[in-house]
Image (cartoon, rainbow, N blue to C red; front, side, top):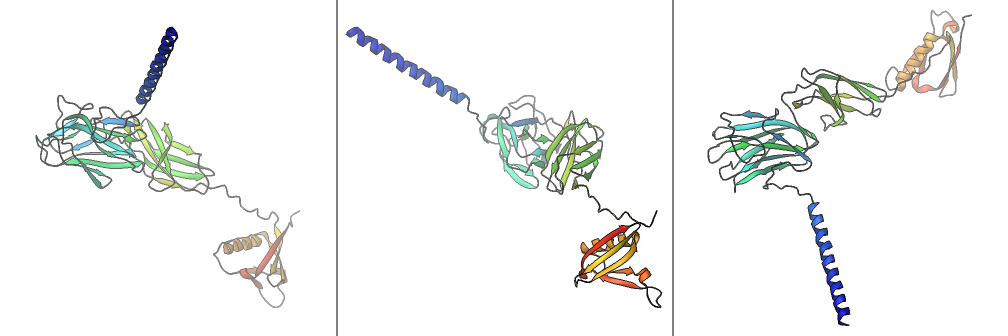
Length: 358
C-alpha cells in the first residue's frame, strides 16, 4: 500500500513539473516573438522594422552655417556633424514618404531647442538630458505620401549646448531626395483609348526612371512602374474619361531625384463619326412639329451642310435657322428661292440617297 502511494506521489510530482516546464516554455516563446517599437526618448541604434536609415553623409543633406565639425569618436549610429557656433545653423533636405524620425546622442551638453520645419510648419525637440546612446529625439507620422521639404535648425549653439545631426529614418516605402540626381524635364502626356503615352527628356546622370501617377493635381502620387531605362512609357492601366496626373523621377547610384514637371491626360474611347451619305444627291424630307412634311432634292454637299448645322445646334450652339435652296422648285419671276427651317420646329428628318452617276 505504501509503495502504491509513493508511486502516485511521484507521478503527480512529475506531471506538475511537466506542466510547469511547458507553461514556462510557452510564455518565453510568446515574449520573444513580440515586436518592440521604439518610442521618442528611447535608444535607437538601428532603425525599427518598416524604417530605413540615412546617415548625415547621404547626398540629400545640405548643411548651412559655419564651423560644422565631425567628431573623432562617440555613441552615434554611424557618423555625425555638430556645431558650437552661436549663429543660425540648419540641415535642409527633401524626402518622399509619410513618416520621419531624427536620432542622435542625448546628453547634458546637447541643444535644448531644435526646430524642425516640415512644409512650412514648425515643430521642436530637445536633445538635452541624461546621457544616452543614439536616441530617438523626434518623430512625425501621418504625412501625405508625397515629397516634403524639411529644415532642421538651431541657434546659440555652444560647448554646453551642442547642435548636432546624426541620422534620419524614413518609412521604408519612402526615400531621401538626392541632390546628386538631376530631375527629368519636359514631361509630356498624350491620351489615347485606355492608355496614356508619356515621354520626357533624359537626365544627364540618370540610369533609370520611376513613373508616378495620381488622380489629384499635385499628388500624392503612386509609383506605377520602376526602373524604366528609356524616356518613354505607355500607361495602359487607366480608365477612359478619368483625368490622371503624372510625374517622373530619375535614379542612379546616389539615389532618387525630385519630381519632374507634372502633366495631366484624360484618356478617351475612339470617336466613330456618323457615316456620311455615299451618293452624290439625296432627298431630304423634314417633318415639322405641326405634322407638315417638307421635301428637298439636294446635292450631298448641301445635305452634309444641313446635317452639320443640325448637330451643332443640337449641341447648343449655332444659328436657330437653316437656309435651303429650292433649286428646281423656283417658281415665278425670282432669281432664287430659299426656304428656312427652324430648329425648334423640326420633329424628324430623313435622308434618301441616290446617285446620278452611271
